[in-house]
Structures are given as C-alpha cells and as structure tokens.
Length: 157
Length: 393
Image (cartoon, rainbow over all chains, first blue to last red; front, top):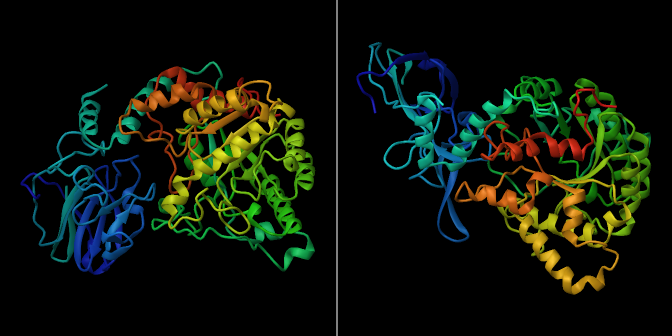
C-alpha cells in the first residue's frame, strides 16, 4: 500500500518493541495501534467501524475456524484483536473482520523497520479521521505500512 | 454538514450500518445540543456499573458472623472470549473498569454531558442465585452501606440502585425502607434470574415498600442460570454465552408476563418498573400476543382492569442497551413506533461492559421528539428526577 506521498512517523527503537507487544500512538491526530507479531510489525487504525471504539486496545489473541458443527481449530494465535466494545474480531495483518471480511475491515497502516528515508504517499482517501469503513476491494478500517529503518520502527500513513 | 461528513456518510452507507446510524445520530445530536430541552436535561444514562477494587470494601460492612466467609457468590460459568469488561477502560492502577468512581464522573458523565447516571452496581453479585437467604440478605445490606457511604457521595449526578435478596422479601422490604430516603437512591434492583417469577405474591412486600418510598423497581441481568436460579433459557442450559446473552429477552418476557398477569400493577398502581439490558425489539410481539390472548383468556386473570399492554405502557420502562441493529436502519424506527418507545424507552450505556452503547454512536438516528424522550424525558418520569435543575431531594 506504500505510495510516494506517505507521511513518515518514527515510533521507537525496535529493541524496545518486543514480540507480542503493541503500542497505541497518536500520529498527526490519528490514533494507530502498532503491533509486533513474531518480529513483523503491523499497524492498524485504532477506530472500530461499529461504534468508533478504540479497537486496538482490545484483547489480542487467536480465533477459531470450523468446517464441521461442534469441531473447530484455534487459528491465528496472537494475530487477532478484539474490539473492547462488542468483541468484533479483526486480523491485525490485514484489517479484515472475522465475521464479514468482505464488508467490514479495519484500517491497517504500513509498519516496518528500515533505514531513515522519507517516504511519501498516502493510502488515506477522503474522510480524513472519520474512521468509517468501506465495502469491497478497499479496507474499511485501514492498515498502514510499518518498516524498521536503522533500528527504528517507522509507520507510514 | 461539511464535505468531510458527506464523504463519511457515503462511505458509511456502504457498510457498517450501525456506524452510519451512530454517525447520523451524532450529527443530529449536535443540532440538538444547542437547544436546551424544556426539561433542562440533556442525557440520563440508565445503566452504569460501579464496582469495588477490593472485596474488603463490602466485607467490612458484613456482620461479624459472615466476615470470615467474605464474598462467596455463584459465578457465571459462560465465557466471553473478548472479556466482559471494556479492556480500554482498565484504570490507571490496573484495576477493573468501573472501580474508579472519579473516572466514571470525569470521563463518562462529563464527557457526554450526562445529567444523571443510574448506578446498577456489580452484576457479578448474584444475590438471587445464593441458597442461603440470611447471607444473601446481609450481602445486600453491605452493598447498600457501601453504596450510600462510599459511592453516592462521590458525585451528585450518581443515582443509586439498592440491592436486595429476592429470597428474603420481607427483609428486603425493610432494607428498602431503611435506605429508601436517601435523595440519590431512586431504584431497587433485582437480578433478572430468580427462583420463581417476580409476579408471585411472595415478593409483594418489596413492591409495597418501593411504591411507598417512591422508588422504581428494576431488573438487570445477573443470576440467570447461576447457582440456585432457573436455567437461563426456557429451553434449558445453552452451550455458549452467545445463547445466554441473546436470550436474556426471553427470560425477561417470563418475568414481565408474570408481573403483569399476576396483578402487581393492579395492587400497586403507582409502582414504576425498569427492565434493563434485556432488549426491546421483542416488545411489539409480546404486547400484541399478551393482549390477543387476554381477549380469550381474560377469565384467568379477572383482576386485570385493563388489557395487559396498558400496564406495560403505564408502569414499565425499558433501557435501550443493547440497542437493536436491524438489517435496514429505518426498521429501527418501526420498532420504536410499534413498542411506543416515546413512552417507555430510556437510554443506557452499560458502561463499562463489553456490550455497551456509546452515548454518541450507540443510538440510531430518530426524530427529535423521540430522541428527547429516550435521552431524558422517560428517565425523568421513571425515577422522578427534577427537570428544573433544582437537584435531588
């Protein structure tokens, strides 16, 4: 999703940001959750499309999948955030909703650790900060790109 | 409406209709909030859960014979994978949401311009599900001591719900008379789940005392299917919390049918009753069916002087949370119209529980008259709240 107009935000040193940890940061007025899942960084808009709750502050864990009534598997451990209001589940990596991936999707942002170097491109379109969601091809709740640049975790909005 | 909102609205229309409802609701509220209501009230919240951080807060008020026991109450055995309390509201000291009373006042009441908030306490305190009547009664008394000594003085917008043990109704009536004169105490809260339905005459001493003290009676979900209570659904004990939570309305239908048909509101015509957190979308069906059946089965309940729905519309109120989310947003208006929500529905946030409805985003859009009724007018009637800013007496 990285484009030339993304705005760059330094979060912290990657040594201070441990596996399994998450941080809620304010980036130019956007509340964003940055997650370290197994050494890979992900960023998700901290705004649930349901009632505007701080989505990223909810419980982080796995979820279930089943193809037979009464039988199920525990999947995506540590990768699913549950909104603290009403429990809607979103995949931190994709922003997709567990119950309706085609219609409800959390906004994720690019998050990575990379050498310091300005990146510019925006994945935001319209509706700045309104935290609403889109159906279909576009992610209703944004994910953002995260890099690690010379040991610094950087998020691009 | 500026361009940003228009864009938001378009996006919202495609998905997350409840987000749309909330968004439109907020826009409309924005217009409303500039116009003081005739009542002088902005918003009354019918359901906020305060709790203690340390059990000693309650144990210290228990009689000596129970101090060593501490708090032993049946717990809900159904689990919620996302937790029952809002994880974004854990206090700065790491305590459970709802333990910091100043935080409730500062971050919920101030934030959303709430004039009065009905505190409904800790709904893990399953008094109706305890087998021992005396212990349950003393726990209720200890809770009420905590309420009037340690909770209500924190903020004069707090309204208090007394707890009573439904299995000890005579003693419960004494508690209601003992604590019922406190100006902030406006309600007596019964657990939704109990051993026998709430219309039975064994409970009537409580209702007599509540009417005498001008307090509302209320039910809120707790004790359903725990301990000595009945199964949480008519069909029995379900497999998961999704069934337990969805069917609270079914349990409430049982309580409401009992209260109305046994003649509680004939005996106590001034008694007001709140049904909190059991939903309201079922009310049109329920009232229609009850009235239809009354036409042929009236001889079983000859003490009813009016059709059953008359008593519901006159004596019973319903809290909005969890708000109904129909497939088409406009269908919510039909529900409101069919149930006579302008007479009976009151806003509730259920803060800080997981399934709460945000004061700004939780209520769907509706016309201004309906919104005023739900935001404060019906609550003022239910709890006899001053509407001229004169304060509680």
